[in-house]
Length: 549
Figure 1 (cartoon, rainbow, N blue to C red):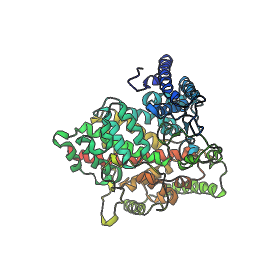
Figure 2 (figure 1 turned 135 degrees about the vertical axis):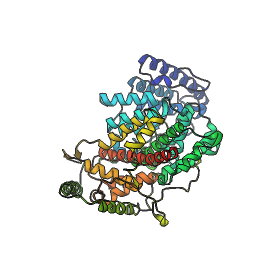
Figure 3 (figure 1 turned 90 degrees about the vertical axis):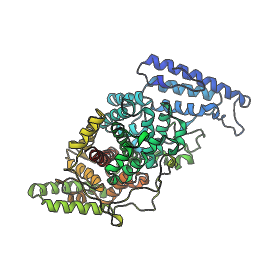
Figure 4 (figure 1 turned 180 degrees about the horizontal axis):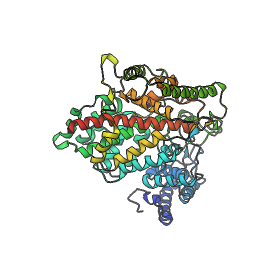
């Protein structure tokens, strides 16, 4: 771990070797101490206090960013030696009379999700945390929420690691820039910030971050596909693919394009998860910490504006005291599942009736929308990372526009998309397939307070409703089941998270399945993520297949 001119190096902390981490921590500690000592004497004579009676700010020479990173490590590193030493370094800086940061709040907006404290996890979770930290150099909030479902998290981390860091058609800085472009389509500043840092870390040109027009023309050409995939994937045609592959010196190869498409769909759907679970900024990112001292009541107005509230509210789980009405809702849902199963066993609808029910559900999904006056969490403007800011989700048949139904029997992930991805970007088809299957089949056979429940019918209804919103039809599915199993508040949540995630509010999250555990709501979000990603991929891969044939 060498320290470049004016830069603190963190790489050694990701090592699984304790001696390597110890050496890195010593180097970081010395570098931070040197910077701190250059600031401390500038302040008044000891005790080192500013005119307002507070400790001296640490803004000079980038020290505040370094201290924020140390704060994150002291709270979120899976290695106890790193947590303890980071805390000690911060303590030494504070003793010199320099303000150190503190975290804002306790986690994401839906802060009840943070039930696992780093350092108290079980052996399996520790392995996942260590793998994530070794790969990314951080233990991010997405991981801390997904860990409710370790089997899925393991598959997710493996896939993301392969897409971002293993051998592949695209250079590393392109991968992170495409992640920024995709996340920015949904104004997801959380993901944009993470990948801006990663982009710079792998040697990306800072000028590209001033706007898409400053990036190479090849990446600019991807903008059209990015916006259609994010908002209206049913409009993608083989002509769009041809434009990208045949643009003289700025053309994409087929392998590069497959890599780009998988990255775009990955980050569009991850933006859905981020907003759907109310993920807040990382501790070391803007909005995740403050250098302001705590107020008397132990939290200040900046906590509240970031979605955090008093300690009592934070630890009050909606499942602690379940209203009678909510209990009845669970019982009613289980009864509907039982009745539908009995109807399935007794009679099967004709193909004509099944097609009619699909078209009806597709049409009705257009009219599912949230109330316009709800305010979603404020986000930083990230529009410079994409073009055509007015382009967004539009329902199929608005203004008389007709979009043909996408029949899975004609083009499916299993029979077509999987092999195409695996052929052009080896192993990725397999990784995606595993992730889709884990999310679709994941079950603990529970529903709220009930155990030994077969939830397959409900999981299939959620998955197929999402695909229905994208015009994708399964011939063997009775879409009449969706209206029986998914109530309006749940449909509003699903459609918002999948189609316009930036408009998701905490009220929407709270209003569906009020009696269910938070882990079950996170499970719902995993279904939304994977169903959305597969839907986008189906449209893009079908267009690529048509171009190739």
